[in-house]
Image 1 (cartoon, one colour):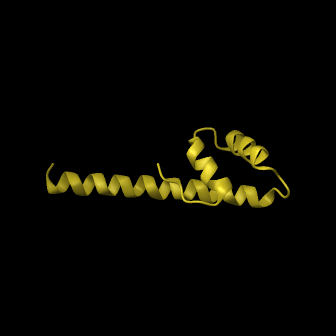
Image 2 (image 1 turned 90 degrees about the vertical axis):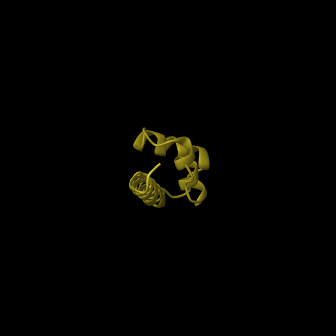
Length: 69
């Protein structure tokens, strides 16, 4: 792989990471509006609100961790 291809792959990866981080941040903002919800209820709400997000991202949002694809 040439240097330009590596740079493009790195840029694409960084963009995906930024998008995933933003999505998890959006999920956490939604969860802050929900008071007293269980983890199961939180995951259910996140699944409805973010149907395309992977389970790992929704779990990271609930747990407060960083999403690692």
